[in-house]
Length: 325
Image 1 (cartoon, helix red, strand yellow):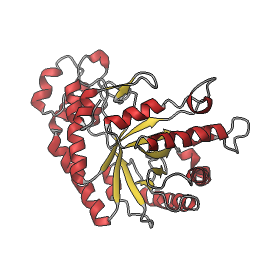
Image 2 (cartoon, rainbow, N blue to C red; image 1 turned 120 degrees about the horizontal axis):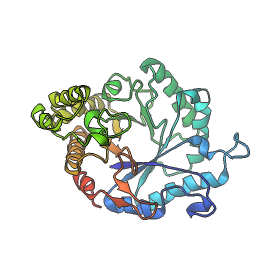
Image 3 (tube, rainbow, N blue to C red; image 1 turned 90 degrees about the vertical axis):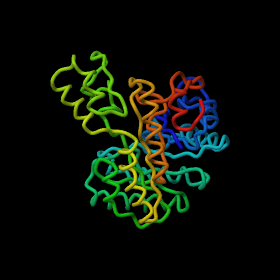
Image 4 (cartoon, one colour; image 1 turned 180 degrees about the vertical axis):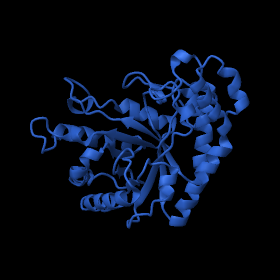
């Protein structure tokens, strides 16, 4: 049970952990542990560790912030997934970047610190991606021979991509995927959704056509078609379980561990519907033996709000996840 944090290393004049504001304070970490989370996933740009005067070297202060954050988390009972955000343009230097990061993390606790090779899908062909990712694992293993690493499938990083991905030749790996289906529900009122706040409509979950029809009379024809398609798909706990079950079967047949390291719902969705979705997806993941981390700590799909050190939780979502706020 984990949560992803957009971790910042932007320097400020004063702040915790050596004059850097990491957006995640010791108070925040303890709050997450007290709520029942077991893991935080730190998502950040590895370039933020570089010196501003010499980009070819790391900034000792920023490295100290990262390591202190990891140790503070361990002290309150949280494991940490270090998840650098890489892009396709970074491929040429990714192996060396990850190898250097592994060197910085090499002395961390192997039982509570995990390195994820990249935080997001890179939409790369699965065969080519397997070769690239395998080379990155080899580079990292020079400095982290015993730590568990987290890898991901190619393509769009969904369940089907994972099911088609042959495991790499390393037994101490966790295989990650992300899941935001149905985006018609989970992405409502976000930037790329056909349904925006001005429409004054939110789609429910679970949903059938009968649930949708009374809501859409004032929408455009294209929006109605989109909403009706969502209703026809009949998303509910059964459908979520049917999606996750094959992944659990794959995990057991391949003798590997699997993690859903990204799922969430727009904060604009009706609170009871949002909580119900979280409850059902958590149940589907647990039943399939799949670990999970939420996609956002704060933000459009976040479950916390407020400033660092004084965050408040969406208690309905935490309760749906079996946590406390």
